[in-house]
Structures are given as structure tokens and as C-alpha cells.
Image (cartoon, rainbow, N blue to C red; front, side):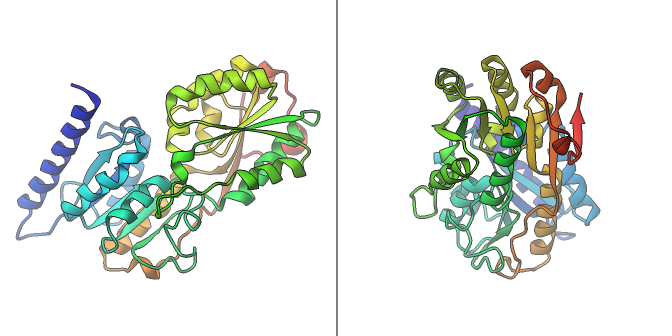
Length: 339
């Protein structure tokens, strides 16, 4: 069975499950259906995994039990961001009660499909205002609210500062962007590159800007980084880079490039340093929005939140392998050190 066939099978099976559950409880308690736009099947599949277990458990604690009064209809794009609007339209046609959109691209696709069904965004939504998903964090307007990964530029500036302190003599910093995450509701692309160039320049880095649009792009991009002489690399947070985190860490190690990220998961996979939110914290906040909306709250009345804690993680094993000495000033700030 090909990828398209597998995706259709999953969609069909999920739809049948939602319909079956609704029928089983008809006359007792209506099943509320949460449609999920998921970037990669491996991250949020029906099989047990920490992410799924977390949000299902948190919803249960709030009174929403899968198979009793809540069901999930999951559509997996497998990295094909261009299909997200069409997939969102499928959820709209199924008349789900709320759409849970992982990542900025998922939220954009959902907004293109509906202006009435509530949408909760969650994940690497660094620029929801710039991408046209919401009007502002305090007053999102329309049918969208949720959790932004962070308000991008401030956190990215701090990450570059950590890179400078860790590598005081480094001159070349590579920035690996994931453009599909930054499509806008109007169909264009938000371009943060000028912001990154200024951040790098302010800290005396020469910036090399590279783009990855699929998992197959990482190997040639890292080959280019090595040829350019990059000493440090920052890979933008996205479902694509999260899914490819082990591969990215391996490529960075092979190229002898210190890797920095906003994803804590990347450090567990072998990256050097991460600074950003804990993803479970993001999930917990998003679950609160799902609960409030299913109980009647209007998205327009719920300000978009950002994670209430940013964490600094360091992989000392990677540092030793690269011959990098992490300054004590950074180690003392770390929330967790591996090795």
C-alpha cells in the first residue's frame, strides 16, 4: 500500500471510529469529535507514545474520556504541507467540534478551510500573527486561539547569544530554515531571514542561510554547511526538524558543527544545546483550550498563550566529542545536563 493509500486508510479508520463512538452513546452523552491536523504519523499515531499519552491523560483528568465522550479524528500529512488546507476541509465536512492544528502550517490550513469551527493551534507556531492566523496574542479574533511555541525573535536572539558564549572564537553561523512552516493565510510566505541576519550580525557572526523543505534535504544542506565552514548551526523548530532530530544530530556530529535548537528533544538525540519551551507544557496548555471550547467558550475571547517556562538543556557528551567547553556561566543556568 502506498503512502497515499495508507493515509486514506488511516483517515477512513479514524472517521469510522468517530462515527461508531457517536452512535454507541446516542441518547446518553454526545461524543465530541476533535479533528487533529498532524504533520507526521510517527509523532502522533494511535500506538502508545509519550505525546499522545500526555494529552489523552490530561483531557481525561478534565472529564473527557476517549471512547466515552470524546473521540479524535486524525489526518496525517506526512510532511506534505501543501495538502493541509484540503485535509482541513475534510475535517470541516465531517463537522468536527474543534480542530486541533499542530504547527503554524496546520493552523493556516485550518483557517483557509473554516472561519466558524473553533481552531486550537499548538506547537511550533512562532509567527501566528505574521502568518495571518490571529490578529494579536491578546485579541486573536475570529475562530482561532491556542498556544504559540514562543514569540520567535526574542527566544532566537537568546539562542544565538548562547552560541556566541559557547563558541567565542566562531565566525560562521548557519541558519537552517523550514519554509513550509511559514506560509500565510493569504498564500504568501512570511520571511524572517532579515531578523536572523540582524541577530547574527549583532553578535559578530557571519550568517549562512539554508532551507530544508523535506527530510531528504538535510544531508545535502549539511554537506553545504561543511563546505562553507560553518562552526555552529541553528535548525528552526518545526514538525519536520523534530521528526528528523536524530538524523540532524548525526549529520552535525559528522560535519563537526555545534548544533543549537529550540527543541529540547534535539539535545536528547545528540544536539549540543537547546533553549525553548517544554513540549509537554505546550500540550497541557493546549488541552485547557480544548476543554474550555468544548464547554462553550469562544476562541475570540481566549488570548493566545505562550509556554510559561523556557528551559536550557545541554549535552556534555556531544560537547566533549566536538571538543567544545561549555562555560560555567551557561552550565549554571541549565535545567538539565546530559553526560
